[in-house]
Length: 304
Image (cartoon, rainbow, N blue to C red; front, side):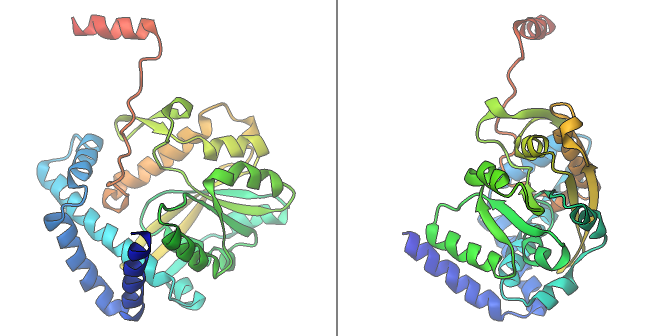
């Protein structure tokens, strides 16, 4: 089965490889319609997540965001595959970092940095162009795919232009082994944690939200400055990246402070243009437990 999935993936890859950009987006429009209205890919999850995040929005506005979200999802999916076939020069024309000096200034001080990324707009092309933009040697952490053949193929393509890919399961070892070398670590940090008992909880988009702790934990443990990378679509197939230093001295922060900064930054971006975030993830499947008996008792009294 895995080999069959891999062969199908390679067929799609070979097809997208020869499709010019002028035809890529009409193709994306078609896939978007199929995904939303025929396959209805995670549509109940998408609608529920958007409604809960924006209770003040009308049904018409929710419908518009849902429609635009599926367009974004298909654009990013096809662009990600197409990006593997583009030259570095072509990618740099379409994916521009407006202020790389924010990160490169730390390299001049022989300091590593952590780029805090999100599943917003096109995050994939960043792994393709990073080595040509930043002075640091880049390392990106990823969660291995269940299909080992597709996983190996994608890793090889991502590493073609200088990015080093490392499994999230080896992240602590990598941070320790590379501690003396100025590195740029790329962490996509808006996933749902696998274990809610180790999660940080924040109020995010009007909901109690469990957050993974890697960004903050590694930043504080190794005192690595953290930079948020804000990716924005200018038009289809063209993006800008704006860097913002979230924390220059993580070791001096309180527990949860960096996570709150990151989530607040992401929330502000999503509120301005919600359709470009990855709403099909089951982001809120974990429920926050009552912290203690007193809180539980108070909540019960409130129901009487």
